[in-house]
Image (cartoon, rainbow, N blue to C red; front, side, top):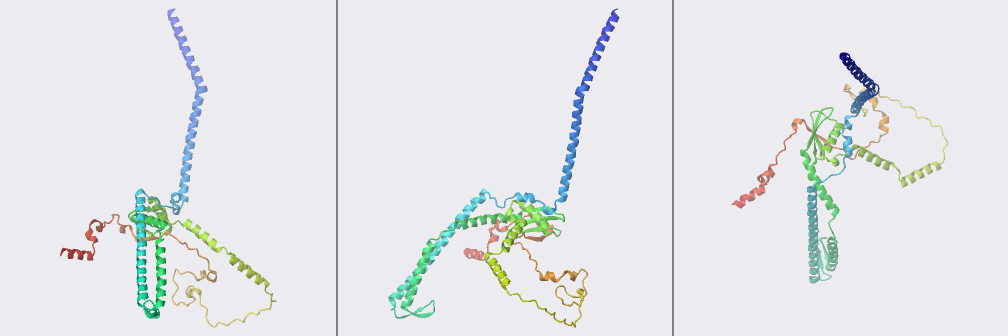
Length: 399
């Protein structure tokens, strides 16, 4: 009996646990597992979408890179730059010092002008005293200015006029004051020149579609010096100069061709507009032409054709644009004469010329550029800076 009882209890608990486990698994499968599966599927879809978006972005970037020309490189960064110089504290202090120097020099020049004018006035007064004391009015006097003999009274009047002019000149000089705007401008230009002189030691290297280019700005010549083993066209040099300006923050050095073209078009439009006087003249001319009497049409007989006794040569036997007969055979790569027409000669096409443009000077290959800065011996040892005259003075002082 006991064994049966124990088996019954064991089987009861076993079946109960199995039933509980099965109900839980069914519930989890019906409710919870679907959510997890849906979330998992959503995550997979998101990952796939992200991968697709990344691929699309990469494809777009690659397409943009392919579409963008090398000539348009660095334009966005260049546009953000301000077209002015930003000065440091040391440079501003140096500007103040230079302004005071220029101001004091201007005052000294004014003082020197006053002293020179007073010297002239004293000489004129001495001449007047000499003429009034020692000569009579009717006596003759030699005038050194005109190299003629003049009456003393006429000479006295001339000297008095000169004295009046000299006094007025002194008063005008005393009223002079240094022009502060010009002095500020000179001091600012001095700082900019000092800064620009240092750019000769600053260089960049850029890879172009044709080859590498090394570029330096030469302030003395106002041009961009470049070194390359290959011939580089102007449109690629513009890109390299743009990079140079961006790296060293010197925007005013670079001349933007788009801005120059806009200014040129504006000036040409302003010039093409007729003034009021020109419009009046045109109106008057049209009126006069309309008022002219109408002449009846008469039959105009054409002149008889002239008999040409000379032979006509072919175009390849004539020199281009001149009409002279050439005895030599034509070159292989010669331009055909049909391109040179009378219409192009008769109608002159207006040509637009830019007022400013960036200058580029070729200095040689990469081997010609020295990366090591040369030492100025005159700054280290003063003996190298001495002239022959100073050397002779030292020898004479020793003796």
